[in-house]
Structure formats: C-alpha cells, structure tokens
Image 1 (cartoon, helix red, strand yellow):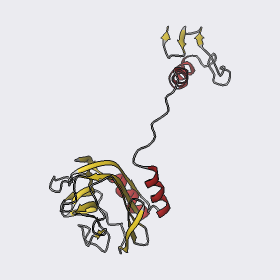
Image 2 (cartoon, one colour):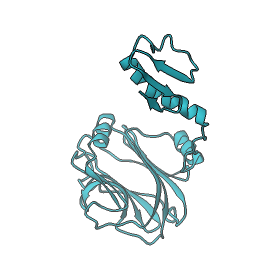
Image 3 (cartoon, helix red, strand yellow):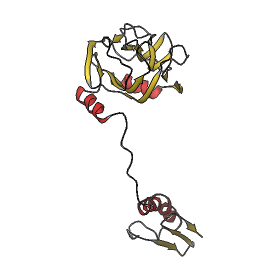
Length: 231
C-alpha cells in the first residue's frame, strides 16, 4: 500500500472549491472475493472517517463519499451492479458534479448513476491519501494499480470514454539524437551561464541559432555542444 506523508490538502481544497470530484483508476483486482470494502483509493484517516473512498466489495465497486448530507464515513455508499468487477484489467471512474449527480463507469460505459445530496464543503483537510489500504492498515486491497487520477471536476461521459480508449499507459517518448540532446543541454544549461558571466558576447538576440563552439574571451569560458566546459 501507499500512504501520503501528510494530509492531502491540495486535493481537499481543490474539491471543496469546485464542489466536484472524479476518481479514475486502471486496475487489475486479484480476485472478486475481497470485502470491507477493500480500499483501492481513499482520502481517509481510519476505517470510520473519510472524505471519499473507492473500494471493492466482492464483485462490485463501492464508493463512499462524504457530503453535508452523508455521515463522516461517507455512508450510505454507492455501488456498481453485481459482477461489474472482474479479476482482469479494468478502467473504473467515479464522478460527482456540483448538482449532486454521481456516476460510475466501468470500461468506458456508465453502470450506475444517482443523486448524492449535499455539498463537499465539509471535507476534512487532515485526511491523507492512501492506495490499496486504509492508512491504519485494516482494509487491504489485493491487485495491481496501473493508474490513479483524481480531478477537481466531474469528467463527462465523452471524456471517460476518451480516457478508456487511450488506455492505461502513455506512449513512450521518441528517442532523440545526440545532436538534439546536446542542443537542449546548451539552451538550458550552458547558455544561462554565458548570459550571467558575459552578456555582451552571448546575448540571445545576437547569438547564432546553430553554433558548434562558443568562446567568451573576457572570462575565458569555453564549451562544446555536448555541455563540456573548459576554463
């Protein structure tokens, strides 16, 4: 499990301001017999005090959301239909907008929606963020978490479908040539030093766009495009 080192104040404050929330996760449950519910993603201090929890209750996803109309444990909760949770790679999203409409999506499709009355202004700023368990270690979840995202707004159905189609991994960056790497190093590491030590010679307005070697006679600073300095 993973526990934030302190309160998740940035998340709490953003959600309180917007009055909306979305939790998105790509996950692979180890089985469909876990109960508790087993905590997948949770903003909570212990088993009975929380702002929100996405959990697993056998073959269903279960969300407990604290509002001014639910209790400090987020009850009553909202559950997905039976057999909507399987022990396979799954995309699950819970969203709740400022009008109180809560929705749950599994693999890009809505599986349940209902009104969850109340506001989010009573969220407790002291709760930490935990993954795959409560911070107290009493509600472990078994499985793999591939991606977790929390938004301070309610994603639309279209956005949920786009994220599902996009998958759980971003494309790896394209490899760059040594020349392009050297150019980036020059622009971000070497040029600022020149600007600091010899502005007349290395003003960005008069420096050539392509330059294999640069020498500052006043300070005797030299460098090549690989970022090596000679003084």
